Image (cartoon, rainbow, N blue to C red):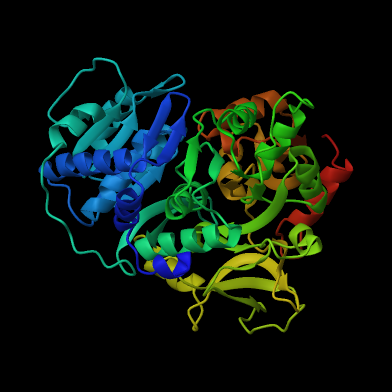
Length: 533
């Protein structure tokens, strides 16, 4: 039976148990510190689930994972799956205010966190946050140091020991209707939205992706440096699991050299990533310095990719390159090219939809457009989300009367059923795979005493995909520099939202109703016509 058929209505916990029973000694996770078999991950997740169950964590409860790419993240994720709980994967590099908002909004009852990332001491962060988070009852820390404790703080390894061999109630889970992951993505105003994804959303998409890419138990996957986003959860972790492959966890999410080192060290065959990571890898690639001959497939997704870049990746890495179209609300992969597709289709399109996934191209009024027409991409299929958590009105707005999710992205379906991405109807800037919404950055800029008005636009960048350009009209007579503006943003915005460029202007181009003409403003910035006041 095909992988997609075997995975129909499969829960995440059942997917691991099935694989661990069939291939207990096969390596699942690889790191610089060692490897973990399917049987080991299965056993450790069982022990952690038992320990968390003793705390009263049960089906439907939210468990936040504030962790880098590490085995503890994977073990905690599958422990939550066993309990019927919902995982809330969060970026450890979020600002404290962003972290507080998502923990509060998700109503997480437990958080599993790393002790520190860089200069951030997460025990101190959570000590400050706990009084403001009444739902958060337990904190589980990952690290080696002797730490202070209270009756709500436990170390990860202690819980594995205490839960080993214990029983716990096995919940009844409906794979289609029960949520398993609450993944945060920014809204049209830059405010986070919690995307609820069911077990079936994730396993069906992962199975479809693995099948389309021809993944097997012989594959070793690299490029997954952050597990908190849906691309890593589905295309990285679950596609690897369902195909019986091995996943290399790269904890250094700032270094592309480390990924290339991993390719050589582990004999990796599949390389997932956003365009920025591949560009950085190619910049540091010295001919004959590494043996990359094991690579058979490179999958690019998560940010705009030009045809020239695809060819550069193919030549530089010496492997077949396929471009995918992914969306958080659709559990990551929507379309991807297949091995049998022509080189032209692999280069100039994002492939065809996954099995049982339908695409429509819509006019602004919602009517369906014919083939070869440019319009808004709408999706219906097993990967499409349950909805936005605690936002029923927003959820209703993005679904049409036929149950299709309106993405806000512009595209065209050709006569062969391949999707051509054209642009985005939304104002979102995709910088190095991260969604940045102008309004959030503009609000921070306009709080500066020297700024009269601000507009943030995305401009094409060969490294980042899109760079953030802050266009500013200063207060009359004010003296302010680009460095001051960037430092001002850095105080409250996360790194991915800080402007890459700052331009000072006398005024902005506007429509007759006074709205800023953002497209025209972008053209001015790119052409260098923006004048300093």
